[in-house]
Length: 329
Ligand code: CP
Ligand code: NVA
Image (cartoon, rainbow, N blue to C red; front, top):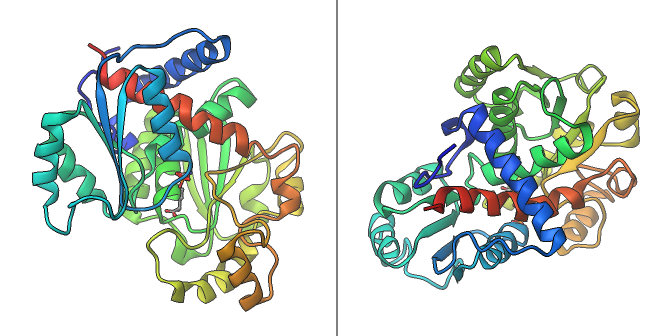
């Protein structure tokens, strides 16, 4: 399998075999890290990380993974560069492409990371856009494999705003890998119809399925994985909170939902999560709307079924695999 020189912008661009290869490589790199074995596969290279939105997991994963692979890293924060304000994406791409061996981008529209990739001349990795979050999906899949042994036939239910980056990307990833993907949300939060049709084509080839339902009991029955994400994503206006809380509260992941899913079901969340009032925004919103938790209850989040911290750790191992594979000589 050779992925040298490839961009990593969305899983739509990757075959099931290529995705499996990246997951196998991530598992191997994880094992080596635990054993303390060196993995200096990209020694002497340098990468740039562009973050137009904030991050904990993605930034730390890229930085640590790069160092473990023997690379130097430059972090460009949301205000610390000329990008967009004084210099276009195309010009930035051509400058950074002369200096670095790879570029990570987190920001707004998918078209921005695509433009960066078109001009950079080096691999570009999507660290989250409004539409897709592909490195997150690899971490989710590695976590699912660690819990169930394989991906084929696994039923994953996504609860909440299924038309944004996480819902879209999970639908693409699951349908490519022979999984049964369910978006469980009010109709207005269903993913884009065109993307649903495309994913149903992937599912036809892989033996998976894609379904959409507004019914929580039916949607989560027999699920292996119950997944959710914040109800308001980065970059969205504060004004949408009221509507989201009203419309998505019936789709909160509660103990009842997990019981309905069944004994073997695990809970995943890309994080950060609003499961209590211990954050600035969580507290403000909690007080404003008289609620203590949003997309998931603390009871589920803190339960043994919750694998969210394994999932967060796996961000680093899977991002390392993406960089090692695309930068390999
Ligand atoms: N899941 C995720 O992308 O987390 P960060 O926003 O902290 O990078
Ligand atoms: N949907 C979330 C994902 C965060 C990892 C956001 O875009 O803010």
